[in-house]
View 1: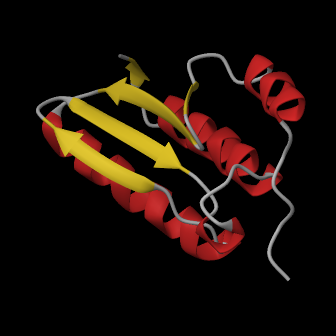
View 2: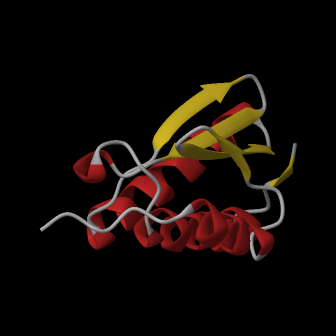
Length: 102
């Protein structure tokens, strides 16, 4: 059974605990900066965690920037608790990897 989508109020509460993440419709996004090659390495670490927890972000890498976009496709492209759990993992890994908010 797919995860239950969150209400708008629940989303606002979740975002309040995740500084730097922004809502874009039914997606949350955050961009970090680092050297190009370190962004590629960061994407690999995030991909490994995503495989481990079974929830995958969209990843967009440009020159010295990496953006993550998260939604739950299994729930009709809506935001669920899984998205915010993944965002917390991304924040921890990015910080540990030396990436800074863009």
